[in-house]
Image (cartoon, rainbow, N blue to C red; front, side, top):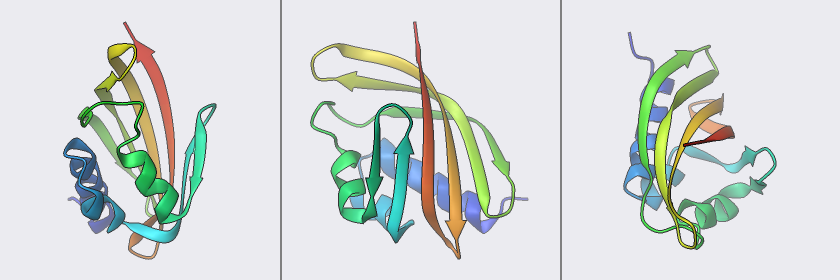
Length: 117
C-alpha cells in the first residue's frame, strides 16, 4: 500500500521531471534543507527554488525510480537519471534521495549522486 508520504515524494519527483517549481515547493516545509554531500547545502525554500533550475544545467532531468523504501517519517528513493550540463553535456548518474518529513511535508532532502559511464 502506498502511503501519503510516498505519494508526496513521487509528486516532488514529477515536479523535477518538468521543472515545476510550484509542485516541488508545495511539498516542502518553509525551512527545508537540501544537502548534497560534497556539492552544496541549501536552507529554506528560496535557496531550494534557485537549485530547481540551476543555471549550470539545461532543461529538466530524466529521473527513473528503481525503489522506494518507506520508514515512516523517512522515505528513501533510489534510481538513475540523465542530466544535461551546460558545459560538459549529457551525463548519467545513479542517485539515492533520503526524504525526512515533518508533519505532512518534506523538511530535509539528502541527495547522494554517483556518475555513471
